[in-house]
Length: 224
Ligand code: AP5
Image 1 (tube, protein in one colour):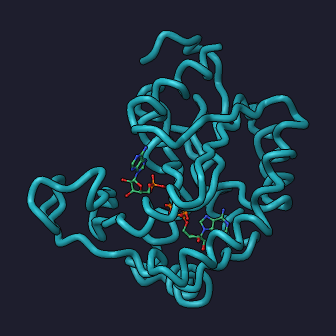
Image 2 (cartoon, protein in one colour):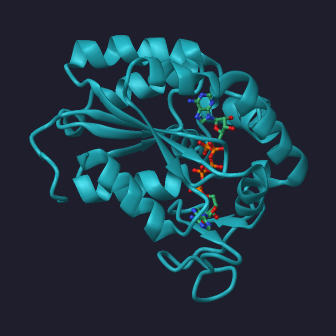
């Protein structure tokens, strides 16, 4: 546990363009605070891997094309997860909210649960950095671990360090889909920066450096 007030029960949000490093940082932040890391992209990919009707439809109709999954579907998933016992002490949301409607929904849900949004970390980096991170990513389809061919290679090329499964190139990390995801982000998600700034919970983080430097900046911003 870090040195911050561990009695505060809050929801933390990670905002930023696809590939900026939200998952990497949200995972580490949740671990440091010993609270759940809730990543809607991971939950949707898991549903698709388990071949549930919802997961298969989300993957084929939206995710593989770089589009957002409809609000009601994602809100339903988040509602179920936030209602679980381990979220009562707070949690980290990674990839949610992503539209104005999702942000409004979250405001109502967190107020019902008595878990205010403590901070929204907005991870910002130049587009060329973000595109390079996304195109070099390799993912484990089994345990969800993420690697990067240059910045975070696995010990054995193409194989997950954690579980030994062969790594894949996420279908939505292919160049044309990466560009579409960036477009969708600018059109539908970037407005949330102003939304959380207006609620005085936004903290901008320079996410162009290395993983440890960014992690330190986030933990300092949380305590400050
Ligand atoms: P999701 O999985 O959330 O994808 P995303 O937002 O596009 O984010 P990414 O996972 O691509 O990137 P990231 O910012 O987490 O970066 P990462 O840490 O992995 O969503 C996928 C899809 O699901 C969406 O397109 C949509 O269809 C659907 N979806 C999900 N949530 C939804 C919602 N709320 N509403 C509607 N639809 C939704 O890092 C990227 C790479 O860079 C990795 O290889 C990593 O190792 C490397 N890296 C990270 N940090 C650094 C660093 N500092 N230096 C060098 N390399 C780094």
